[in-house]
Image (cartoon, rainbow, N blue to C red; front, side, top):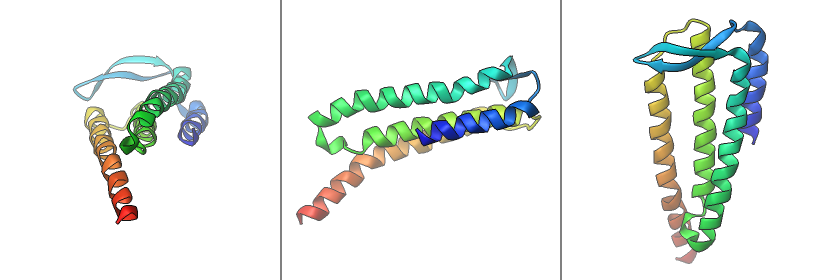
Length: 132
């Protein structure tokens, strides 16, 4: 929830300095569609909705498989960080920075996926340490 608040505050702080339209869609590093700058504030709202959905759905599954204890928290954090990266990409591109948006988001997803895979392993190692 704190990351959604950070995204919302970041969006509000940047709003006066943005042009009328901000990037919405990229293709091969080029902006191909824009949206009104107020829509930037929807990114943290979507982030919060997805994060809460992931926690709720995976939280119910954790009760069935205790080895997955940290996965819901890690996955929801990864989703929140990817949304913050997306918001930062939108802001930087709107201000004229040329950056490989697809590469940045892909990197965030790959690192997030590694974190999600590492969470159950860390829980198992912690349980092994306690047991032995």
